[in-house]
Image 1: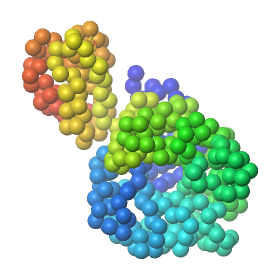
Image 2: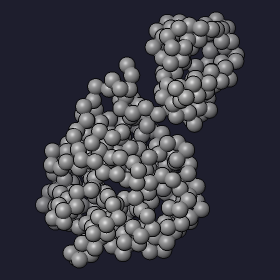
Image 3: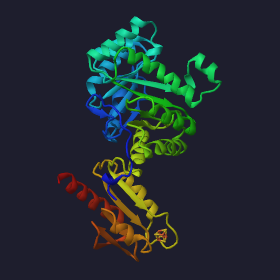
Image 4: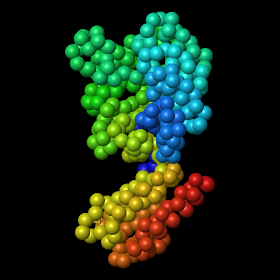
Length: 363
Ligand code: SF4
């Protein structure tokens, strides 16, 4: 099965652009992350954005809580290539400032800006500068009256909050926006996104908010986002982890890879190992994952410990090994072409995979 064979039928949506990254209307699902450095520390924030660029992030969100941070944002923007979203909560003056400094998207809820003239000035500024807006509603910060009406952050409550902001933009004839309705509870988030998907045409930004640490948060996100993506819902995503933001990007791509929605880099197929293994599969996979992080060419690589499943998986992969006594069978494009010394396995595979990636990239 190739990536173009994904059985998922995507929800139809309108298209927006965050910088040069298309979102919605069939565009590849964009993987986002967010910096966690102090925005006023320009050097550290630029370094973190560059580390996210290295693992393939499409869009980065940066908090801009103060006018001082807006001045730092200006300097940050000049030093990175990836499109930046400024996260602004209440102060409309910050939105106007970062627009002047070349922001690619504003994460601001129009209902939180204050009076109508402030809302209008932000929306007109976004329109004049071709800057889309992300409406972001979180279950944990719903308006007081909605909380009172529903008693708890139900999916309906979250969507009602989102629709208030959407209606403000509709009234101002501004349609260049995307919406997120995040909750930390997987079922609540899924139900909210499903409901919202029936109410607007704009792209949806997916996330399970405050998902947790690297392991538990990745699993929660994979289940929540995975269910929505499998239904065709979602145009961009962020995996929210209490971890290095680069992990968020890697997990985001792994989710998309698992669903064959979007390919980037190596998809490893490895057996769980047992006493039949002829070489150290776990160490080989971990070491290759670490060494080959920079490869962006989509490839399936199978690392299987013995001949029970090894040849079958290897035949269906771009490259694969099936463990054998002292030497293992090596396969490329469905053909067994060599035997690799088990003791030299990691280095040999790294060399062969890099050469293949280069070859495929030049095709
Ligand atoms: Fe064990 Fe072989 Fe199965 Fe791997 S492929 S788990 S080594 S039987």
